[in-house]
Structures are given as C-alpha cells and as structure tokens.
Image (cartoon, rainbow, N blue to C red; front, side):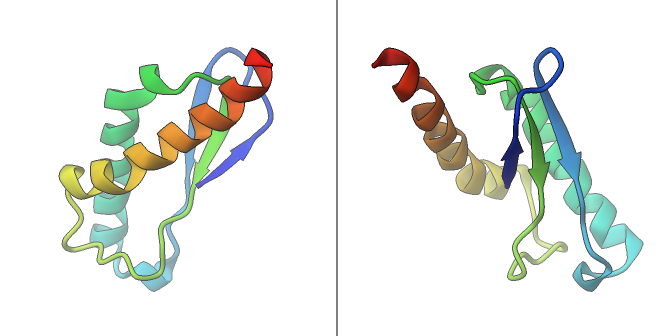
Length: 90
C-alpha cells in the first residue's frame, strides 16, 4: 500500500493488479475484495490522500476474502493514522 500526498477532498483508492496474479477472474476478485474493504473502512482513515494498493506477491487471489483483507489491512490503516496524527499532536 502506498500513500501519496493530499487528495482533493478525502481519500481516494487506486488499485493495480498485475497479470502475474492470474487470469482476469482472479485479478477482478482481488480488486472487488479490496474495493469492498475500502468502502467499509474509508471513514476510519484520518487523512486526505490517494492510496494506491499493490497486492503482495504471495497473495493467492483465489483464496482472498474480506476477512483476510481486514486481517492484513486494518493494522496498516492504524499505522498510517498514527504516523499522520502524531506530528499534528506535537
């Protein structure tokens, strides 16, 4: 996951899934799950930014679920919020 600058009014999501992940069905499944995660959790992201998601090489697109995405990405959102909120508090 990459985070770039300040978005024009909130948080925006960019997805890129390489052909190395598998056929279109698998790549589309990965994108659907990540979009759903983002839809459910975008209100917890406390910054204005463009977030670009690039899946790990080890990710098995056939087995990805919303639960797996939550397990992997909620800690990332927490870290991102801590990094962004800490300088403002000081």
